[in-house]
Image: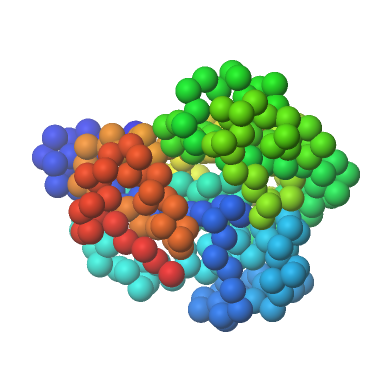
Length: 306
């Protein structure tokens, strides 16, 4: 975690952590987008109005669901600094973004490493390719609580994400990853994700990784805002100036999301902090509570932004 080097600044400057949800915590709806800039760009780049997508279109359809999640997150990020300028008013304040899975794309836009239009282009390419991959090989994701030994899970599928201590998501082909194939001590702690239609963050999503790599030369990542940093899902660490943004996003599609490591870094950061949750329906707060219950009991530290 990047901490100011000057000791006096380190004790006064604070960090605003902005957590962006992914497809599994989506909160899209029919309400209009509030950012005219995002609404206009999204219509141009995606060719559709995500606020008009029906529940039937969003349920189990990776393409529509990821577009809706991504655009809603971009709308909130675009409004955040304007509507909650009080959070960023203190001199020396750093903004640290972390976006879960597809949420990493709008987070990169917020941190200035992708332009709004480039973020939408990556979002569309990723969503379309992952939808095709889901149709080619039906996949399933299962959330498991109380996991002591992750190696025991590998017989059933791949570790798609490590969420928080003792909790991870396993993904694989639907034909293999069903509750009837799980040993009893795992089955009783398993929740099949019926809201997700594919084995995300496994090799089954290779078409999604290829689609992102194919954007090279068409999408131009930037250095980023001087007051902002962002965590990479694939490493659980902050992006550096030398990291290849498109390659990190491509790797993320087929690799384990290191969300637990990101949350651990947020908790361990010694600076005064505020945690902004961009509409995860309380899930991020619950995850943080599993690491440090005192952190989320202080209402002044946690902001839910709709």
